[in-house]
Length: 229
Image 1 (tube, rainbow, N blue to C red):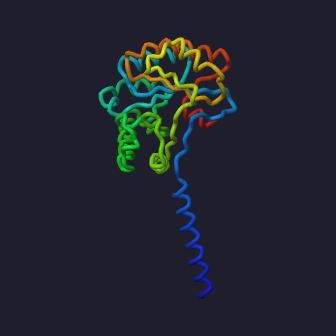
Image 2 (image 1 turned 120 degrees about the horizontal axis):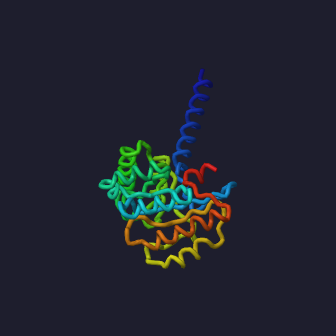
Image 3 (image 1 turned 135 degrees about the vertical axis):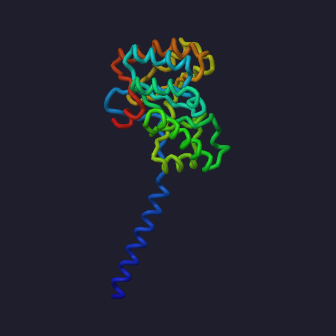
């Protein structure tokens, strides 16, 4: 009987240690690029929705049969819910870009989680789908964010280093096009913004980037489609 009890206690101890190891390692993955077998590319838009800019972006995406991922800010969603619906109904993915454009290095774990969950719930209330991907403001990633996203079963999505359009910095559309269409490979993640109607360079640039890379044999898909390949 004592031997049986010892075996049971040993098994319980092993399971407990195993659970602790799993919990400790349950940190979300961070993706800058995801090498795919298929010639897939992901184009992403941050800081929206914007009732002027986002519909213009949708129009160009439709023109080239491209699917995108929109990382939306919660406080912008609050008063532009119809735009969120249009994005989803057009077949695009909606990701989480926090409730406000916070610097996570100045936030506690509870504050980070609250911002993500609040935005997830808001998006769900509109399209009945919760985001599975999150992009932290300013592209800042730390261990706390990885822990929170691991608990929420969300992937952290950044962007391929040479595929940052820097459209927010008034970069000329010709420079954007030249920069992001060089050395393109399967699984690249492109970064643009739809959060301001002043970004006319964004519109003129994607109107060239999308068809140019499509002609090279690439297909524009959502980030989740990229990760599923």
